[in-house]
Image (cartoon, rainbow, N blue to C red; front, top):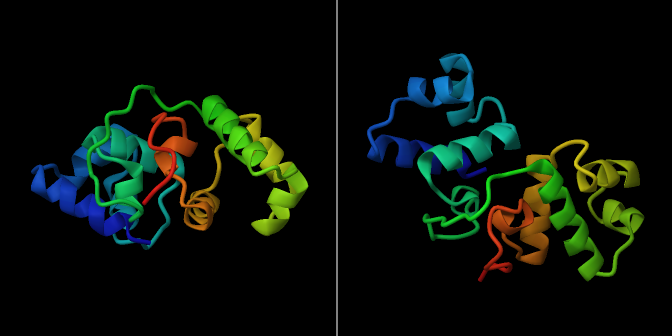
Length: 150
């Protein structure tokens, strides 16, 4: 994934130390260092917080856009993100089962994401965004437009 390089570049440009972000995430700096070196995949909940801290678009950090800036209106909420995912799936006219099959998961996993029981995985989010050219920031409910990526 491209996120670690982009986060590190922004962090260094802004003069922010890894330890500051680790403290903000309430993590041991060693764990955060693993994320930036991609020795451990950063959970989406941490990626969202880092993007908020750096005031940067998740689409940019994931390599879906070259636009760093994000003027998000809403704070992230997994319930709203689940609703947005459900709306998007329904626009595609897919059942949860069909959507799950496309992404090699189960209907119950999709249901859990859609009802906000748990946060969508970073991998699945990336797969959906790539396949349908849809904004991660949009799917997560951080922005209302643009919905689709160029």
